[in-house]
Length: 270
Ligand SMILES: *[C@@H]1O[C@H](CO)[C@@H](O)[C@H](O)[C@H]1NC(C)=O
Ligand SMILES: [Cu+2]
Image (tube, rainbow, N blue to C red; front, top):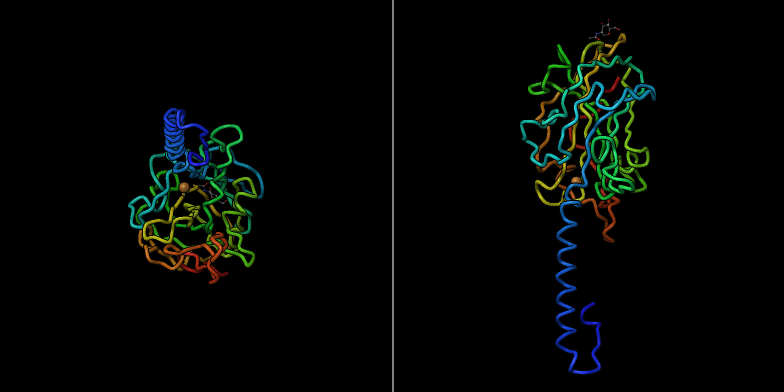
């Protein structure tokens, strides 16, 4: 835009140039001030609903104070995140096998960071899958999530029209629901909700992992807890669903023409 300014007289060349460089400085300052907002366009898991009944903010779920992602798949806090809002809920949520269970994501605790926040529930650029795991525990309230054996109960990746699990999460106001498999053994579990944001995943370490753990007690007559993995451990930085370009040849984030392979084991089959 500086170059497009025309000067009819050499006399105003100098003032015009200084206005121009002042404009550039303003522009650079504006860009710099935008950067923290852009890098903070993340999200946190913060509510659970059971058959559509919202259990309340921070009830039976641990929410980190920071909405920053984890980008190292070997991070020691990869299971349930860390740095939680205090006090951590001492509630264990009762769920029947077969219930519809949802977790709500938001840009910050409470959802929008400010009125009209277009990065709530997450920045639309953050395409990727939404995933749920369970791990059996003795005490869902006190268990940190470390050293557990997890099995996957639900996942939503890229569909045939180029839309992602995250797109459906945004369309649902931050909620992601799944059906608790009818064959899951009754007992106490941590429910690990996860989003993988793939907008920068074409370089190693670029994928962003968001996770939160809910404290649940499943009732029913099932018996399955199988096909377990560890966190960290289940994912590798080079997994085809983690080190991946999600853009087509026009640069649109609709997948690269290949089926998208969601990270982790296959979903529990009843
Ligand atoms: C879990 O659910 C069972 C069956 O409804 C119940 O007997 C038990 O007390 C519950 N445990 C917890 C910790 O809520
Ligand atoms: Cu982000």
